[in-house]
Length: 112
Length: 109
Image (tube, rainbow over all chains, first blue to last red; front, side):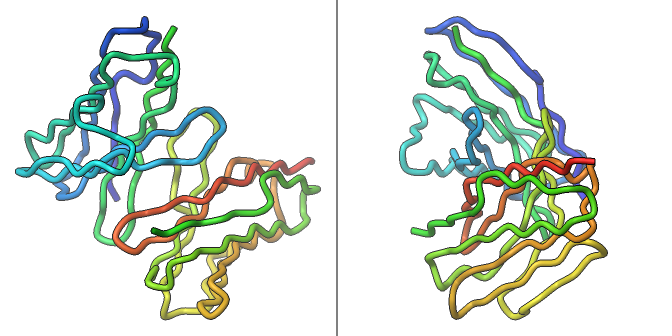
């Protein structure tokens, strides 16, 4: 199994600012994913981040708004840029293990 | 693309009763169907999964069934306990996980 940690666990930010969320995994993984979970809703895939290549974004998500870094096989960051109240969500990091997909504890973001 | 529907959105049962959550998917190419449990303030945790070459899988009190022809799969929890209370998500996977809308299960003592 993979153990995933995320920083920060929660934050309250002002509109127009940016927040970078960190994801650390305890083992080397090829595929990492970033999800958004709006309050009381399901999980929506933002992008897939593979080490050594540009992140692949899903429909409705763009790099300028959600830039992602993947500098090595155990770490990734997601930045939420120029935030608005609509960005208030839980942001989840996930990794593909040998058999299953593991999720981090999430970062709860509130934009005021 | 894949679309996953999940029912019911909320489910309340008495401790010891059974709970059933149902999902349907649209893409016949989907070949992997995991179920996740999400407790308050935590990330989703895999509780059971099934692949398209199997019709049923059981792990203690939890079972999953898959009907590929009808494109639906179900989660069955027997002898429910208060600690089973959580939000449950089904998902279908072709090249990425697509999640259902979630079921909030409440088990009353």
